[in-house]
Amino acid sequence: MNVLYRSFLVLIALVAQGFAIESMFQSGPTRVHLLELYTSEGCSSCPPAERYFTTLKQNPLLWKSVVPVAFHVDYWDGLGWKDKLSAPAFTARQRSYAAAWGSRSVYTPAFVLDGNEWQERDLGNLGAAENVGILSATLDGAGNVRLTYKPADPKNSQSLRAYVVLLGMGLSSDVRSGENAGRKLSHDFAALAFETGEMKAQGNDLVGTVRIPADRILAGRTALAVWVANHDRLEPVQAVGGPL
Image 1 (cartoon, one colour):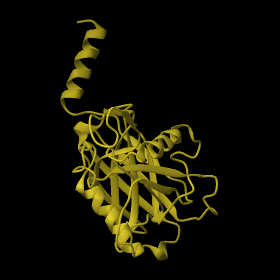
Image 2 (image 1 turned 135 degrees about the vertical axis):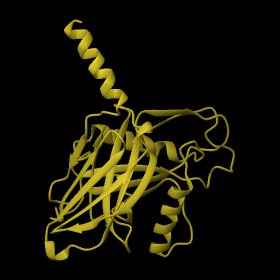
Image 3 (image 1 turned 180 degrees about the horizontal axis):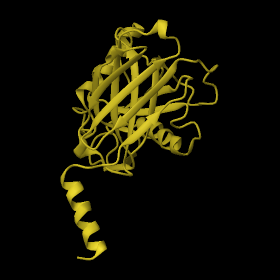
């Protein structure tokens, strides 16, 4: 049996056992900002906002200072076109923001930066760098995301919740009805799966594991967004992410 054939058999065996190279992400000590977009394929005002999100792929701040997530809401789904990327959980998150802001309504497109409404669409002014600590995330082949957060000040370590979003990149949809009928829409940083989990103290650190659907991970077509937040707050304490 020649060497190449033996190597091929070993590779097949590893794949059959669910073997995969781990993907690892780590923030710096300064705050990485979470930029959320609430959008819908049924909204004629949303494509320009999504085109702006696509430009972030060439922005040098991507993943280093900013983690983008596009949540497709479902309250447009009964108005002529059902968005295949929409989910009730995404709408619920936007409504939670509205309640926190004292607003009775939600709208699209809506940008949220670190828990606050954001209209600027200019990442050149994110404010002074704030030392909040280091967030690390490791994704294995089974979809387990292991998180470790090292707060800048161990005395401020408190109970946190972890949030993990699998993002779809380079997606497209031919819209056949509704406000965008006849248009081919493109999507980047679109939430495909949204999972949460508890972070527990381990010495001066906080650790946790969140599982995402491994069968939806496509190399080169998906990315990961991860953040931690206080239990009683929506805005992130620290974020991290990157392509898979």
